[in-house]
Image (cartoon, rainbow over all chains, first blue to last red; front, side):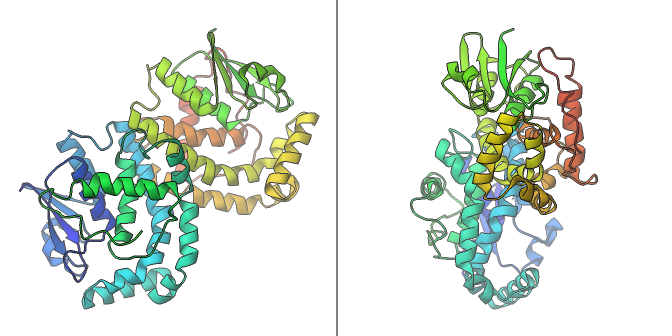
Length: 237
Length: 237
């Protein structure tokens, strides 16, 4: 198999929750590229030392190593141009703005809503690492953060306003066809879905219906793809 | 002249401040399309009654009338495909998300920062209309809104975070070439610049340098274009 991705996992190696790793899996699924994955917990840095890098995902494509999810997306798009995920230089350039908008505006309230759930799915050494780094970042305990999840959920609804308004006017964030903009937001929902049953969206939200359609297009439809399995991600709504 | 846009103006007909009209002017400038404009104040609805529409911009292209800035952008891109502003269906689809993000996240703090300046550039009937509708929308006087401009300016810096982060990694919001994503944000700055000398950005902000480059590319360089004149927009920094 040519493509191998090192994928962040919980105490159960089948539980893969990193939104950055999800982005790569979604891009590969869209391109119908077989992608093998090797699960690694947070604290296993030794297994990716060959890449001179400390964060997942790391991709090997034959003799080539690519680090950082955005670089991996560029690599897949240029090396495997069939079934494009962006389709033009302009769309790829704009997608960086959309990626950073998702990271800066949407990921925060999602993370705060499920942060204790993430912790509880980690092996002991990873859980200790996660608690220490995240509590230092937010200046609050994981328990206090998640206890405020209703307010984080309200903040998420505001952050999603432009996405919601877009989906009222066109079927996908990328327009008439599913594309990279859709994957960028959906990866964030797969992150939550992989670890939590907390309901982030109201069922009458256009984002909810879009998320179902994304799951159908990129997860259910590709479940049989060799090398990775979307079926362990299917908890929250 | 084939293309004629009805353009919102102040008490001085040369003062054109609508961000939606600016978007059309920027798109036409990028495409090097001659565009005539007819200035109309807020309260002149009679002159666009032929379009069965009450808001500017309205475009006539020969016998065709197009209303709504986004529809006009689509019309220009499909009717005049040379020098594309989006360049692909995916990029145009994503641009709607970026447009709505600018409108929902960026325009608010910009408007609150310069709302009294807008009022003060309007003819008496328009000023009364503007005050009544905007004070009802915000539940505050125009004077109180603008008096809080330092806090609106701070909110603007937060809203611009994804745009700023993008411009640290690539020269334009559309990637390696100036495109529609850039026009969508820049139109908002032209709105403020047309009516106010309030400094919205710090001079060491990457968005500041990008804005200068946009002005050079789409305003200074096209100042001689027949049909419209960017030179009356050049006040604020």
